[in-house]
Length: 168
Image (cartoon, rainbow, N blue to C red):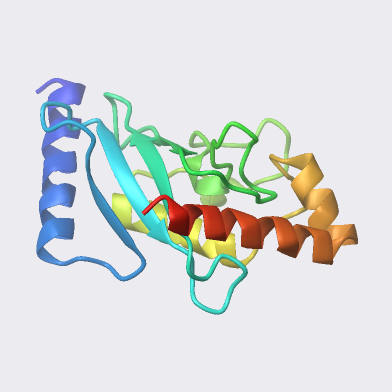
């Protein structure tokens, strides 16, 4: 069986499982019913965090060799966070290719593993929103504000949350 058809079957199963047993904190579905490899995800800002009350849209793009390689995740909603690139791409360890980190920053066990699912990926992103990692930032400006100008950072996040609510 070709890798893309195995990936397709696995993604169909994960979508079916999420529809049957929704998970608190996010919703997910296909961008287009004809393409199982492109998902639309809405993440609710985690309670008791700066992102509380926000509704953040993202696209998950799965490679044809999923689950051997990770998907990419990009917020389409505005996002201000140390671990989100200015173009919306999410930077967390489990979305990095499997194996040793060429920069020596992450352990292989922290990077992508085929056991991850759509659910575990999105829950990791929700965790990232709750606990930014400013040691290896994707958005250097957001990381600097997080560290050195927390009030300015909070103000920007409140604006992002408010805008996400207005987009509903």
